[in-house]
Image (spheres, helix red, strand yellow):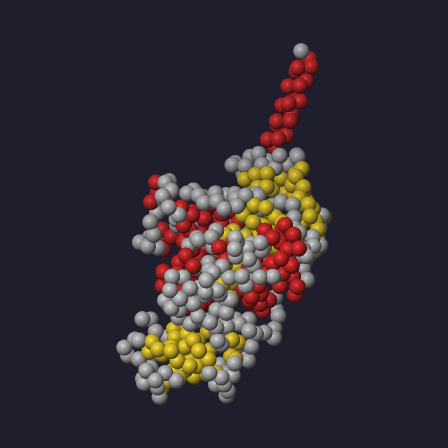
Length: 477
């Protein structure tokens, strides 16, 4: 009988300890990267009212918080300049220790399949240069990637499964290719740890990643919310429904402290390009409010040219120009051009390095103080029509556009009838920020000019840093 009582007491003690053990949000795990030189957010669960003591190996200071009535707690922990590996302990009477933590730069990456596409590629669709990087991966390189599980939800979720990878062959293979090339370029230049958190789902529209309450407030007449009201999934493409990826994935990442956001999405909204010009700025405002930083950098990627059902249809061009136009409505933003990286027969281009590099150039110039390159995508800022030709002035950096004084294709001119015909363009030698568009015998008096307004087209003009100009149009036909 005494032995039985002793076993019961022992089991009771074990149960109490298990109940008391502090829980961390899934993002906080071994191998993670925390943002440097800040008060990094951490959060989790414990017994209601329980004290949680947080200690680190990079500081002698302790952070003490108490779980609320629902058992939730959150804290801010001061981080040093870049370094590691470190450890972090959470103690509410039963310790939980995270190991192999790095301190550096953290970027949150999201979007659809071209952000989801890992370094191993998709079936029959490889990533250029990936094999060498995967096989040559060394754990000593302080690049870490975190992938969120794909979860759609009709109700708001506070947690989403996540896994941090070290820079091993497996880790590099499982990393988003666009995000990995971005991180590698940052590490090569800055020489400090970089962490990338990837929340992506192929074929997802932007509204799936947006707060349903925001959509109800600002886009009430443009979307159906019956799936949320009835808690019933649509019969087809449930992951495309408004708000369901915000509910299931994106919300759970906030407010994990990060330097900024990378976004690669747009193909699924291609037929609604005018609406997208309003959706993307609203999406960014939502992100910044959720992370509590109005100036948090937001860098996005244009969709790449692709043949779709008809290479000469204008939908992709319209969308690329719509994306470029959102820059004016999103402060602290930048766009990585893709006009020279697409593939006519593949919607997932193999060249992810150019995209990742261009996103990194934007961050290096705008956020890390580097100079000497023109990182921004060249955009038209003025159109002049006279003497049977058009002159387009670009915001193209100090060095202007190239090739200089050489006829290039890709332009079109239209007269009052709105019918466009191919035309030649040439960068003016005395002002390489201006392009003369001419040699179009079908249009004697042009009133509109376009460039790259097709599903599939080739880039012909670049800035001094090799970044192509964005497809554009002066009209709104």
